[in-house]
Length: 321
Image 1 (cartoon, one colour):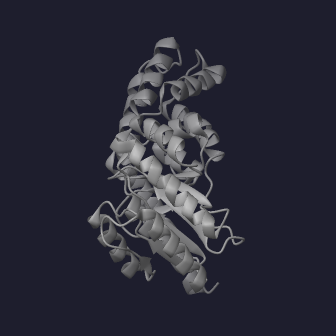
Image 2 (cartoon, helix red, strand yellow):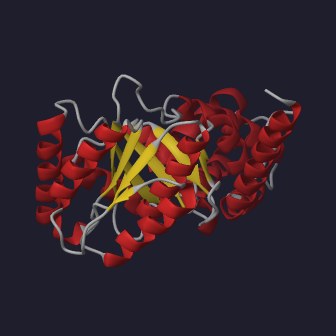
């Protein structure tokens, strides 16, 4: 790696860490303020533990996770003097432990060419934008990427994906609005195989209010893809909008019934004080969290790092001092 390339990589990483810190600031500010307020007695007694548990629940970490974290804190520190920073350091360590098992960057399998990915999620979750950002990320890794505009229900989604295709230099397979999504996916896979693409990202409709139609469509897409490749799709990524907080749980449940969800992408962490929901999702579903998003920029979706996320959530430096 040249010095210039190394400098560029370091600059990109530092820029992402700044954006992550800024993006999580609403959650961390609320959470750290609540933790400080809970520690007025400077001792970890039962009223303080109750207040800390309430603070974690308010940040959408969930009742079960909040109870687990405060119980762990009490094991070592109950009825002892403790500072605000000590509490946040301990919570960050335990949260990182919860997240470590699910922080798995998405990596296309070279055994499948192309590696076929269905991208699912409700309308407004950021599916199409996520596909564009994933395309950019993997293009930068040297892979050839093709996009398929399978959300034929919304003309805007097709147009948006075409814009991302132009921006990232990736070909886009699209049809007129209302076209059959399964036949489009079939054609996209055939084209990707002919072109030797490494990765095929397929957008899908997100009209969860009519689950029966969506379930039927996703099932049909799977069936037609398997006519060409019995192992396709190789991944199914569910895109979740962090601003919905605990409603994300019901979305995961619904899509797990409709598709074989293999991993999560959590977006819009910069627009919410509910960033703790990611911890609750990890604890409940144990699905890989491949990437998180904290902005609209093309580089604002990056692989998920459990320790960096946990420390930023608690308003701490990225690494222990």
